Amino acid sequence: MTFLAKGEKCELIALATEMGEEPSPDMNIMGLKALITGSQSYEEEFVKGMLDTIISSRKEEAEKEERKFQLEKMRIEAGMATPNGNLVDERQVHYNSRIEMSKAMPKFDAKESDTVLYMSLFERQAKRLKIDTSDWVSCLIPLMPTEMVELIARVPEEEFFNFEYIKGILMKKFKLNAEGFRQKFVQHQRTPEKSWKDFVYEVTNYFQGWINDLNITDFDGLKFLFITDQVKKRVPQEVRDHFVDVWGTIAKPQDLADKLDGYECVRKTNRKPANLNPKVQQQGNVRSNTYSRDNGDHNVNQKPMKQEKGFPRSQYDRKDRPKFTCYSCGGEGHVKKFCPKLVKTNSDQDSRRKANVLRTVVDQERVTKETAVVAEVMSHVRSSVHQGLRGYL
Image (cartoon, rainbow, N blue to C red):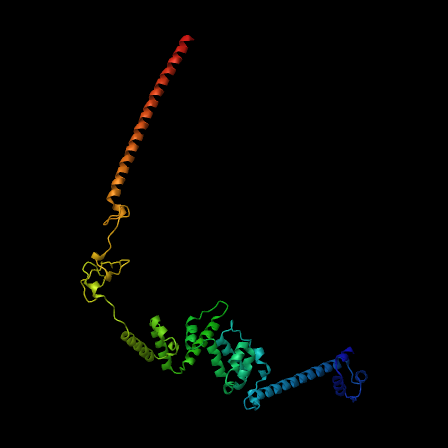
């Protein structure tokens, strides 16, 4: 009978009533226990199962009441968030709308999260939970970091509940315009930890953001976009830099061609003519590496003449060149290396050096001969001494 202890007073009253008894609301738990066990229809196993059924039914009823309470609470909160202050229609509230968006979505991380994919996932979750579009901004703000919330707070009041307007501001914050989407669409790579389905989904979102930012809604617009993109790849970098402010917004090839032709026309008009000095052209003793493109008799092996250092070619002639001065004798017309006096001195020094070398060689030969004679005499004396010693012995 210990199973009766897990039931509350209301559950024991319901059990006694089901058994045909008439319990009083003023009875305590012990009195209800005595009433149930003293009943003629009391059977332990049957009563135990009946009590479990009553307890589970009561819990289900309590959960149902809790769900109704949470649903009504969300209705009131959503009604307070709408601009008109009207309650949201009950048909727009799904059973899973009790799950808050903060639980269904992770918080946005400016360093790690991809803005395009995050906003796309947010829209999908909001549609799945059947949240009204006027409440999307209110659900988005708790998921944003502080700097993003401050950016949203600067939005005009009439645009505060416009999700597309807020989304555009966040995209501009992270420089995700048409050109940014195009670069992500072209350069995006699949990482090993992601599947190919994830990669296709990401590329599709980048492409969709690209064409949406350019307001392309038909096949002709898409065709012009791809033609324009191919033409842009063949434009020099210096020309791209000239149109850097509108380069990503050009979506028609004709508009691009008009801008490029206008730039080339203005560039040719403002181009300065080449500044040629007539004195240089009149010098006959100076080779020139310039030739006419229309003239075919030029020498292809001709090397360009190096520019003389110190004096520009157009400002002096051979007659005006400074004369060389020797640092040794002070004479003009030659340098120290080719000075006649210095050459003569060098020749005398060379002759003396050769004589010294010959004298040294002769002395070495004489010393060698004298050494050989002394060695021969000493050898003859040594042999005579040995012979005398043998005769004496």
